Image 1: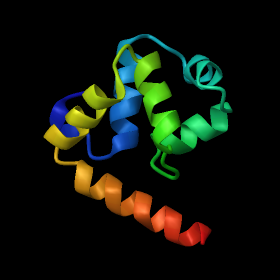
Image 2 (image 1 turned 60 degrees about the vertical axis):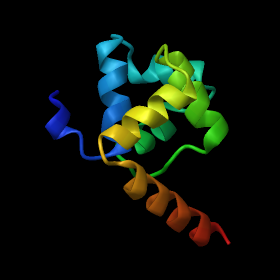
Image 3 (image 1 turned 90 degrees about the vertical axis):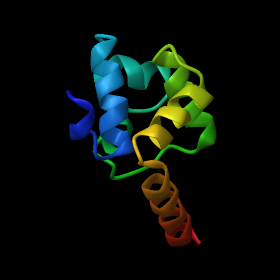
Image 4 (image 1 turned 45 degrees about the horizontal axis):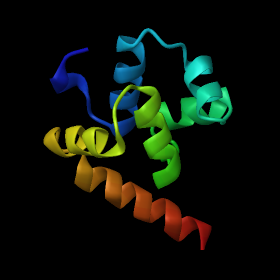
Length: 92
């Protein structure tokens, strides 16, 4: 995948996972979530909270800051934060 094709945080996570040759099942297992939950993250249906975000980054051989920085560099941070806020509002 090229950088210009990455339009969501979920797609970025998917790209990083595929680059590491990790199956979605394996990443989900290592992060203590279901494959369906990981699928929902990668398809941008759900967003990981901070502890899970850091765990996903770690499993992708990054730290949370590195992944967040890449999200910011791709211009996705505002979109991510807005969607995260909207998800929190729905929970209230």
